[in-house]
Structures are given as C-alpha cells and as structure tokens.
Image 1 (spheres, rainbow, N blue to C red):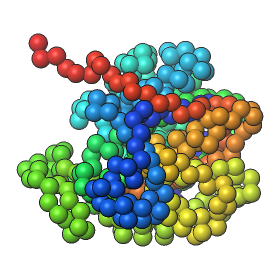
Image 2 (image 1 turned 60 degrees about the vertical axis):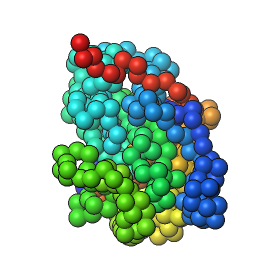
Image 3 (image 1 turned 90 degrees about the horizontal axis):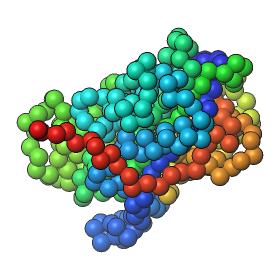
Image 4 (image 1 turned 45 degrees about the horizontal axis):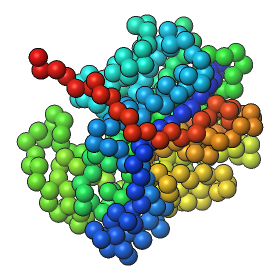
Length: 363
C-alpha cells in the first residue's frame, strides 16, 4: 500500500456544476430497451435520472463554473494560485492539456503549474494526492484541483450496459496552506493487468484504422471501437475484492475510528457495488451518502458531487470528517481521508454555459 500524509494543507472549498438538461431514464429508454429491463437496471444501479450536457458543453465548462464559484466565495487573489490540475477522460482537445485552457479562462498567473491527469473513477483521490504533494514541496499557497467528465458523449446509444448509467458534471476543490490544518491521509493501488476492463479501444493513436460501424459485441450490446466498453463482471469482481482490502488496511494502518467518520463519499459506481463495499468493509451504511440516483455515475466528479449534494445546504460551521474512496478505470483505486468545514461546501450549480471562444480560427 502506497500511503501519504499531508500536514498543514487544508481543503478550503468544494463546488460542483452539472448541466441544466435532466432526463429520467424510464422516460428516455423505456421504449428503447423495454420498461422491464429499464426498471431492473434502475433497481440494480440506483440511477433514476441524471444530467446530460449539451453538444456544445465540455467537462471543462462545468469545472470552470465551479472554480469561479470558489474564487468568488473565498475572495482568493488569482495570482496566488500556483497549481491548476485538471483530471478528466473527456478533454476539450487531444492537445493541448485542458488545464491550460482553464488557466486562460480563469485568468491565473504565469507562475502556475498546469497539467491534465487522464483518470476517471479514481481520479479525484489521485488528484488530491498530486496537488497536495506539489504544494507540500513548493512555495505555493493555493492549489486548484479541477475535475470533470462528459461520459455521455462516448457511449453508444444502444449500449444498455452503459448508456443509462452515466451523467455529466465538473467540480473544483481549493487547497490552501494553513498552519495546524487537519491531516489529509491517502493510500493508492494500481493493477494495469485490468486496463482493458474499461476502455475506448480506438479514437487515439492505437487502433487508428478501427472500423466506425457499430456491431453487436459478445455481451449482446451494440457499439464500435470508438465507444466506451466496460467489462461489468471483471470490474465488479475487482471492486468487491481489492477495494475492501485496501480500506481495511488503511483503517488499520492509520488507526481510523470509524465512529468518528461523518460521511463515506465513495465513487458512485452503482448502488449494488456500494452495498457490497459497506458489507465487506464493515462500514456504517447510514453514513454512505448516495447521489447517483439523481445524477448517475459522474465518473471523476462523483466524490465531490456527493459531498456537495450532502452538505451544500448545510451551514452549521462544523468540520466534517470525510472518508472518500475512488475505484475503477486502469484499474486503479485509492482512499483520501480528510476534514472540511461544511460552510466551505457549496450547493450544486446547474448551468447551460459553454466556452464560446473554444474554436480555432482557420484564417
């Protein structure tokens, strides 16, 4: 187990944005797959509705709106932000890094470290590790962890295994150097043997000649190599064995008192998996907050979105002890335990805005 502890770095704010567009999967897909199949899917995964981005909206648009909310609420001088990391699987462009686009849009200083991380389900906790590490080893006072995915754009319309599962969103987390801040504790693992378990086989620089025609795959779903493929059996097996093992090791290593945890904010893979994790890791089910019933599986954003969903309207001014866990693509999984004041977690924003200057002139 790779584990870290970061002292004197505090999570100073969390904001999340989602598209205005909302759809109930029963209304959208009942006539496509049949009411019985949709009802069974909803019962297993927990997804009832989710927010869907417009064609023009990218994941960075939601992260940008969330970051602007944080900067406004916290009154931060943008010149003091020395790190801007964007974690996404759905960037604006293949190149350059979308973090550089966000750097421009947010009006950040040239004295700022910016790059993308290509991760999804586990990306938020890996991002916390990255930003915290950079802050601890530098003179940076503030860092921005931006995350977002528009997964609905990469799924075949008749793929019943995935098309009803995902929702779109983006989030921003502000980290600040602060004396005597509660420790941020983390742990991580990766198993590249499972890299094919969640994959878009083409649309980059391997398999460049893959056919674009959608055909029926071995699991009975129609897709092409340019669409998301997820091996549900492999992902489930990995999740219910490897993730509880890491949780138990982390709890023992750090002598975590589970009774002191206020919220388990886990990646919202699906509700059946979350129930299995609660059971296998012996967690308090009442503290496992669920957001995917209304937002779907929002990939890299699911942990901060879940926190904004739970505490966004809370103003008790109390520090909340959060146990977060992300797991999935890669295969990769990780834990971040931290404290954050409820007043620094903001309500979820709905937006239909997008970056209108994102196109490149041919003149």
